[in-house]
Length: 362
Ligand SMILES: Nc1ncnc2c1ncn2[C@@H]1O[C@H](COP(=O)(O)OP(=O)(O)OP(=O)(O)O)[C@@H](O)[C@H]1O
Ligand SMILES: [Mg+2]
Image (tube, rainbow, N blue to C red; front, side):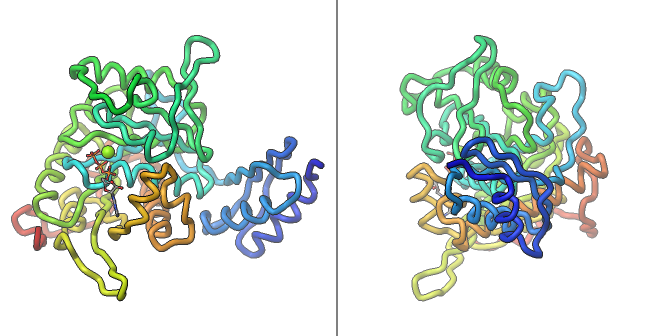
């Protein structure tokens, strides 16, 4: 039997309690969408979701927020006019966890009630099909636009979906590759999104450059590991962003430490890299993520850990990175500084000479 709107509203209200209020509810058969207003978005949305899923007759629950995030300035001719925020996840260095951060950040943004898409822009080594457990081919309804594949309520697109054998090496040359990516941005039916996260390939970023000429990103999240050898390459990608006016929204230090079974903390890769890159890029350190075997295990199994183990410490860490990112994005969009690289989000006086940066180990 279908659930009634009254039951949905009463249950959602009960679950929210003092945390917030319900502004709208829509029931279509077993599909329930509620719009809420709350400060602690992830906690509030999780509570409502769990309570509504427990109701008889409810198959899918979508929790949205009345307060939508602010939008970047969208110029005429922008390839993504209906996407409020475009976030590049990048790093000069390979293997530091860009795809891991991109997928988990995406899931955390989704859990916070945002409308989210994820584009795997790593044409040489697409990871999204594996990390989100999707295969198959996207289709087109009208013969014009490609429908993204949906998973966990997130819209996904990856070159991996279009390859005959996703494991085969792609031998395209630069221009073809860049053309394919721009095509993806333009021809995929993303719909209205609050955030489109782009998982970029490693390197100093000619792809980021090409992309940024056709779509004005809100900015980049830089991923690094704590050690010197990694940060050297990461500095280059920061400089490149600054040269081409891609604002740096913040830095995520991944694989920062490891807590063993006895609870002892080990800094396997030295420390200080994230803070050094944040200082260099005049942005904030959005978070330090530990090495946690569940990250890789769930990544390989096709469900990002943020989705698979929502109450784990590592999932909470990703949620906190997402919350800080949304704060930065809101501030930047409000200030209208998203087209400036030097916008002082944080005052870090004293100059940031690379040589003086506090990086040890590595
Ligand atoms: N915090 C973490 N704890 C444990 N394993 C992690 C963590 N972050 C990433 N990994 C694992 O490290 C490997 C590399 O991560 P990932 O593919 O996200 O890096 P990348 O920067 O996207 O690499 P590439 O440069 O090849 O695109 C993956 O197997 C991933 O599961
Ligand atoms: Mg990757």
